[in-house]
Amino acid sequence: MVCLPAAYLVLACVASALAAPASPSVSSAEPEATLPYASDDPNAPLWNEDTTSTPEAIRGSLGATVIGPQNVPIDQQNPDILAPPSTDAGTIGQAKWPMGLSHNRLQTGGWARQQNEAVLPMATEMAGVNMRLDVGAIRELHWHKTDEWAYILKGSVQVSAVNPDGQNYLATVSAGDLWYFPAGIPHSLQATADDPDGCEFLLVFDDGAFSEDATFLLTDWLAHVPKEVIAKNFQTDISAFDHIPAEELYIFPSAPPPDDAQAPSSPYGTVPQPYTFKMSQVNATQLAGGTVKVVDSTTFPVSVNTAVAEVTVEPGAMRELHWHPTQDEWDYFIGGTARITLFGSTGNARTFDYQGGDVGYIPASYGHYVENTGNTTLHFLEIFKTDRYQDISLSQWLALTPPALVKAHLNISDELIASLSKTKPIVVGPR
Image 1: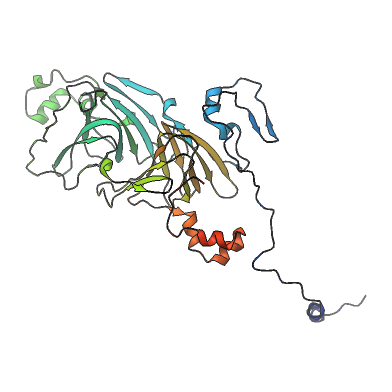
Image 2: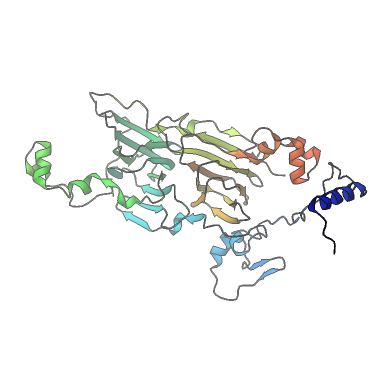
């Protein structure tokens, strides 16, 4: 065998390539498929919570009937868990927690239940509390190590606070309104008589490990300070504190505050930025399939660490495919039914179903949508640990990318590419 130098072999390969007939060019209008096309299966939910038949773990030719014990109401509420769409793949952690499964703390005058990492491990950045107060009931004077953001679900609440400069604040807020107290700011909450049922509200804290049971309470503190020290602090006789509680009050009944209540006059004045915001009076932006209101530090200056989008989605419509660049999303569903698919990259995707009172959680940069799967208006809150609300719209991204690039990726028509919206649809209407 004759061994030729490497240089001769290279020249021979080049000559052979030049002599070979040219391969036909591929039309840029119809790029050659490099992978199989995605399935045409719409992968809609197979039932809803109003279904009267027993849900089964079957989708098409996959799965089988459930022949062991079955919690039918749970399966009726979660069709995309029992019979997930074929587009689900890989592993994504639990992204749903019903507040109805949270242990409830019952008090004279109200109750409180919470969601944190202990029940939803994925939710590392934020935690939530659902609280109820009877008319006049007080959530006692307290403070937290974390910021507190709130949305009133029903009724009205009088809030009070004092900042480190001795400036105070007193205001009443109603359903759809917000309050915000930075970490360490002492405050109180009291249900007014504006609603005969009192009030119910949602609290969100900027720490997934937050526990409502770890609040710094006025009565808890003084119950653990020697009385002679308390008397010395207030320069009075020890008998003045004969009737302070021996343990924390937390929530307790009281007479409702008057409508014309005023904060005590402070020599330092009132706080420079209000701790409340009348979100209920903000006009919602009307969209093709619903509405949206966004409130962050640009409109509610004191809310430097929490932003919110209040969204409604009509039947058959959806919150568009999108993601949030750097912020985790904590959702609370006020009414209606929804499904969300979380895309976590590297082929991982998981679909969840939500009802009123549920908490959802979406890690930063996870692609997702929120689809109304019922026949009533879907109403929910998107909450973020940030001073500015941000999202990336899939439609807008593709519309503002060179069309040839989009076509090379998705093999869609020029007409469809031309129809993509260069402004964010936010909520897409029914087809």
